[in-house]
Image 1: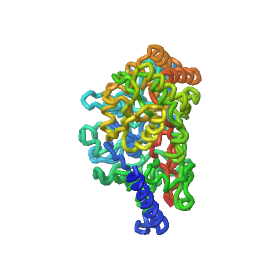
Image 2: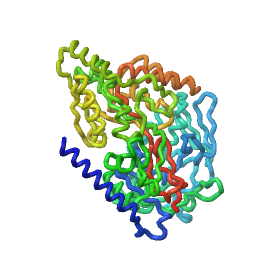
Image 3: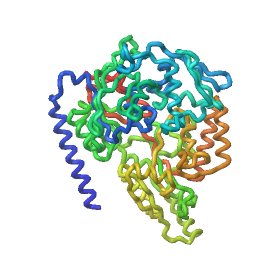
Image 4: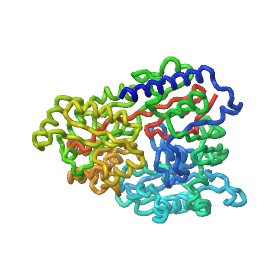
Length: 539
C-alpha cells in the first residue's frame, strides 16, 4: 500500500512540475496557421469512420464531423432539421414523412464523375437505412430500425418511414450517427474499406488516417449549413486527431500546447487541475477554460442474478452494498466534485422520469444489519463477492471495498481490460461488474430497456437477467403513450421496480467536463458529450 501511495505522489508531482513549465513557457513552435487547425487526442482510439459501425463515443465524435442525417441535436438536445428541412408525423404515430433539402452535396470523389460530387436525394437514405438492415454487413446499429416496418423514397425530395407500432422516441433515434446518409456508388466501390475511405456530407471531409497515429480532416467548402449571420460553416480549416493511449500523456500534450482540449477527468491529473470542490486551480485560470454540465451517463455496479453465488442472489446483500458507502464523499475524494451522487434510480438527471427519491442513501448501520441478517439466514459467517472493473475505475471500487468491509462484507476487486469485461458481462461470466450507460437517444426508455426480459444478454443489454411481468407490462404500455408527462410517471414506476430489488448500485450521474485553451471559442458542451466542431474558432 505504501509503495502504491508513493508512486501516486511521484506521478502527481511530475505532472504538476511539467504542466507548470509548459504553461508558463508557452509553445511557439506552431505555424502561423495554427488558429485554423483544431487538435485533440483520442486516447481510447477510433475503430471506424463508417457511421453504420459507429458504436462508441469516440467513433461518433469523428463521424459527427464527416456525416449528416435527416435530423440533428442542438446543444440542449432539441431535435432540429438537418438534411430533412421539415417532417410530419401521421395522427396514428406510425408514418414519418421527411422533406429533404436540395442543396446538400457529398464530399468530392472521382467516382461521382464529371462534377466529382452530386446532391443527396431520398434514394440515398433508402440505401443507407437498408444497409443497416443488411444481414451480410452485420452493422451494430441495425437495432435502431427494430420498430420500423418499411421505408421508401417517394421522389427525390420526399422520404417516408413507417413504424410497426407507435414509438414516441423514434425521431430521437434518427439523430444517431448510424442513420447518417452515405453514397451507394462509393460504399460499394470500397466495400469494407469504406471504414477508412469515408465520403459523407459533413462540415469536414476525410484527408488521411494512419491508424493508431493520426487522423486528419479538411474543411468542406461546400457544406450546406450557415451560422446566424449567414456565414458558411465550419470556421476551421482542419482537424487533427492523435491517439496517445493514456490520459496522462494526453494531459501533458495539452499542457505543452500541442492539443487544444481534453475531455473528462482522470486520476493522473485531476488534483493538478482542480481543487477538491471542482474549481480550476488559480495557476490555470489565465490559460485554461473549464466548461461543465449534465451528462446523460449513469455509472453503476451491476449484479448477474442468474449467478449461483448466494450473496449475489440475496436482496439483503445487494441492498447492504447500496446503503453501505457514502456517494457524496466518494465524489469529493475521487472526482473533485465533478458529477452528482446517484441517490435516485438508473435514469439520470436531465431525462424525464428521473426521481431523486427512489434510490438509496448512505445508511451504514442499516447496511450492517442487512449483512448480519444474511449471515444468520444463510449460515455464511464470512460473506464475500467478487467485483470486476477496469483500471480506470479501480479507485471507486477500492473505495466501496473499504467501506463495505465495515459492514462485515468482503468484496474482492479484480481488474480486466475493457473489451474482456464487456464480453464477460454479456455472457454472464462475472457476478458483479462496474459499468456505465450513456444515452443512445433522448428518452428514458433507452435506460429502462436494460431491465426488459426480452433483452437478456448476450443478445440484448439486460446483463442482470432480471425478469418481472409487471415491469414488462409497463414497458410495453409506454410505447402507446405520446404524452411525455404520462410517460414520465410510467418511467419512474419502472425505475422504482428495478431499484426495489436492488438490481444494481447506481454510483453517480456524470457531468461533461471539458478543458480548452483560452484561444478556443465556440466549443460548448452537450449532455451526450458529442464533439461538434462546426462553430469552433481559434484566436
